[in-house]
Image 1 (cartoon, rainbow, N blue to C red):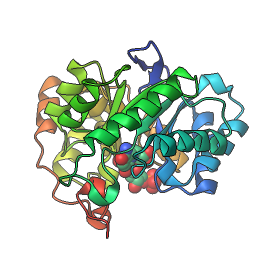
Image 2 (cartoon, rainbow, N blue to C red):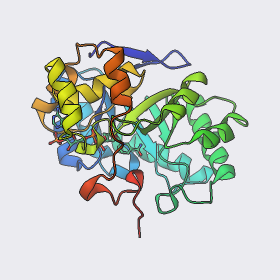
Image 3 (tube, rainbow, N blue to C red):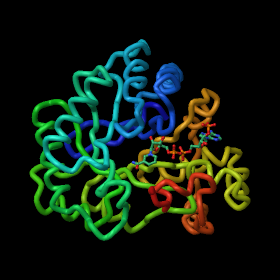
Image 4 (cartoon, helix red, strand yellow):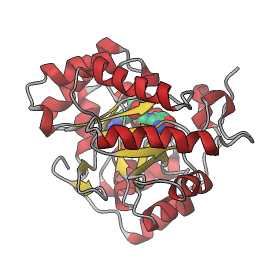
Length: 287
Ligand SMILES: NC(=O)c1ccc[n+]([C@@H]2O[C@H](COP(=O)([O-])OP(=O)(O)OC[C@H]3O[C@@H](n4cnc5c(N)ncnc54)[C@H](OP(=O)(O)O)[C@@H]3O)[C@@H](O)[C@H]2O)c1
């Protein structure tokens, strides 16, 4: 799996499999990056909001692999919606990570988390945020730029005014919750889709119907979910700090049949994400 990449519209290669680091603190992220790189991963996903860029950076600088072999993504905090704040935050990410450049910088969300999916769409502000990303790209601070959690009209808003088109959109996409029409829209516009929470943040692991299909292929539910997303053309960034899970998530050398792909697209939609349902990305509301 480690050598498989997608090519962004500017020719940059992004590994199809990366490590997610949400909810890991600096120390855990430091160790997880070292472990995952030693296993063979070359792609790490972090964000300003995860408060672990320092730990991720320490892991990168001490892992023994040359910087240019690695693909590092971070995200501009959802609340930053003006040019100067975004530019300053990109410099802050570079400093915390201890890097000369970031491989992929994305806007974490079209709206601040407290207003996620509410009426104020921040269309004008997001054009300004995008301009700051374009300028960071031209300055060589970031090698690629993209979006996260953008719906079709949020993307169209950027496409109508941008100089450089978004290269990725990182969105919630997993078995039991696959936004097929948004994926199709992105792919038609040459925007690579990255699937976040590809294992449903854990909420799909004990689903009986999914387990039956995983058993048929002799794989774990986590592996089936990752392979499903990859066959849809998506990049996957499963989170774990457990080296056994890191290895398991990289063993994806099997092919899901067309019929099983169709079944997986239509497994009973997820109702809630259990104790994690309060997060805005899972439909919750922050106070
Ligand atoms: N852009 C956004 O707004 C956004 C939002 C959410 C997430 N993300 C990104 O996407 C990444 C992944 O999403 P996520 O953290 O929500 O969840 P996820 O990767 O879907 O699921 C993580 C859960 O799956 C478990 N797991 C992982 N591999 C496993 C395996 N092989 N066998 C059994 N269990 C396994 C983990 O447990 P263990 O830890 O015990 O292994 C953890 O409980 C994040 O870390 C972050 O980088 C981005």
